Amino acid sequence: MRAFSYEKPADPAAAAARAAEVEGAKFLAGGTNLLDLMKLEIETPLHVIDVNGLGLDEITETEEGGLRIGTLVTNTALSADARIRRDYPLLTRAIAAGATGQLRNKATTGGNLLQRTRCPYFYDTNQPCNKRVPGSGCAALSEGAFSRQLGVIGTSDACIATHPSDMAVAMRALDAVVETVTPTGMTREIPLEEFHLLPGDTPEQETALMPGELITHVRLPAPVGGVQEYHKVRDRASYAFALVSVALIRQADGSGRVALGGVAPKPWRSDAADAELPNGASAVMSVLLDGARPTEENAFKITLAERTLAAMLKES
Amino acid sequence: MSPPIDFSLRRRTLLAGTAAAAAFSAVNRGGAAAQSSAAPAGPETSTVTLTVNGEPRELTVDNRTTLLDALREHLKLTGTKKGCDHGQCGACTCTVNGERINSCLSLAVMHDGDEVETIEGIGQPENLDPMQAAFVEHDGFQCGYCTPGQIQSARKVIEEIRAGIPSHVTGDLTAEIAITDAEIRERMSGNICRCGAYANILAAITQVAEESV
Image: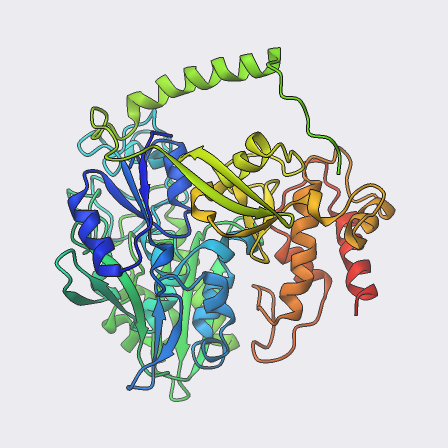
């Protein structure tokens, strides 16, 4: 790990201002992903701004009947909150499907959204990776690469990594909005749909956040009801990243919403695909995964996504 | 409490140091090199006060020091084990402010004012915690390296179920959660046992859960 200086500010706007002002600064919340990457020297901050003193660890009710989740609410606390379990069970299911009890006790709401990909070539510093070292190439697209876990849609010639979060997939289906504070003290709202960027030619740019901008809250609109389910298909029964995950909200009239994890650089959902839900899993996936560019090793994800949704539609 | 271990430089330690230096130069080739010439803007050490097993302890550490290394190398509490050092194996599990965490994925400087409990604080050979006694009774280990972490997690798993924190295998999210084999297995998935003592670990946890109703 590279040496760094450390501070723990008490005010969100001050934290954002410091992050923009100090060279090589990085926010630290739960640390479960950042410290792992710092040990591997994939992340090399010169200055760490510990945000754990900012408050921002409460879930409050909004005037619209939704919930406003402080960025420092842990994954455990969020999944166990009685209002989340009752009104947004999809979110509890998705969080509980990820990581381990120890990790969920430290991992935060904002940090979960900002976690980096688990692409093995991003993690292996002996391999080229456009996300880790821009312009160095993509080892995942080289001959004979192991791409089984990687993305099938929304990817580019520069990067086929997926976003690893389960929580974010549920939040995308629930139309969550990210609230931030900028280094100049302004607040901003970013719909989750626009929060994560597709890689294009710049896979190192992963979110819509400006330098120094800090997530303060994630807001959920009023509950939408329906039957809410999260199915995660993975290589182990527990503690593994998704090959494919499906978040489903299904209303009594057959309408609803579908979001996918494990297939793209961001939670994958579209209004046009949602509209196909009354017509079944095949109809949804032919729209949602239209334009997919899988590798030979991960083409199975297309079939797996459709069959997972089909199984859920029969169950719900 | 046992006397602290005297950390003299041993051959094993020397070899480990050499390997680490070699790994460092390899990492530098492909790592993020953008800030390689720049230096941190402020001090690289911090002073932190922790309460460890009920005793206040003050430490001055390099900011890079994990809570795990602070416990083992600075406070000589070597009951907490370093396995993978990346949050994958659970050997480093200890309790901070009443919650189990991976101490390898937390910096010591993040824990100023926190209350830490390690395996040494849970029980001693002459005065075992019920979970420690149950692991002995059920042979919940072979080599024992993962055991402190297993026991830390196991005690908290029972508390977490009773506190109504749902897991991936929980059925009704609004009902009371039953302590079942499936619930215990799922919640223990962050603690890996290379000897494969899982069946006996499950038996030990089940016994403690039943006896502490």
